[in-house]
Length: 281
Figure 1 (cartoon, one colour):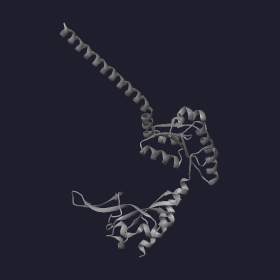
Figure 2 (spheres, rainbow, N blue to C red; figure 1 turned 30 degrees about the vertical axis):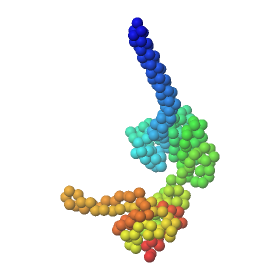
Figure 3 (cartoon, one colour; figure 1 turned 180 degrees about the vertical axis):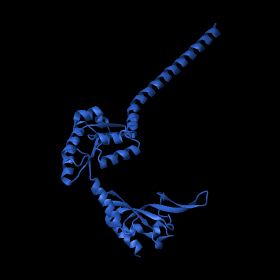
Figure 4 (cartoon, rainbow, N blue to C red; figure 1 turned 90 degrees about the vertical axis):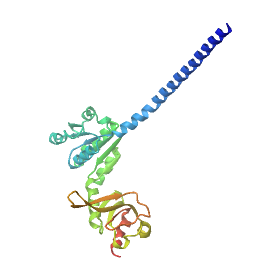
């Protein structure tokens, strides 16, 4: 009798233990579900940020170049222009295209402009239309508005009505070109920001074989070598040589400058101009 009770009590204890485990498992899943609900919005935001969407209003030269660059970046692009021929040219490339007046708030809303992450207003020639377009985008709560300006007054107005960034494509291209043409022995030139640029300069003979620390370029010119561009000769299957170039972006002060290397240098424009002394001895 006692043995039977003992056995029964053992089953009861097991059932009780299993009950506790079941409750604990249910509790664990409950916590996991709560945790999943709490992180899901974050993961959704991260996912949507990876798949950024853009609207390009106006498909002139600048607008088309911007749209094509965005397409190459594999993002969603909505293109809008009042010229149906321009829209037809881009229709097979962009995610969505629409022939409409960029100052028509109903048309922009119907096209889903209010759902994009960034909008680029590239109708600089028509100042009134570009200003109205920026105002409409602001009313539609577009998170980021970038607008093309043709002059300083136009830029100030765009800034006042809500443009987050104003660009001068022709001016910026001219600055890059002048910098490239006037720099001594500069192979490539890129303006990173106002007054700060990146240049590629062939390594002069007197620093070849030295480490970057030994060249003392940072002390002499107040610039930083951020990469080395190496050239090497590769032979194909037929034995024909082809010169290939590659960048070493993980340079340290102990990196040695090789023959035919190119220095990729970051610095202020006023300091970069002094680099001509590299080739004057």
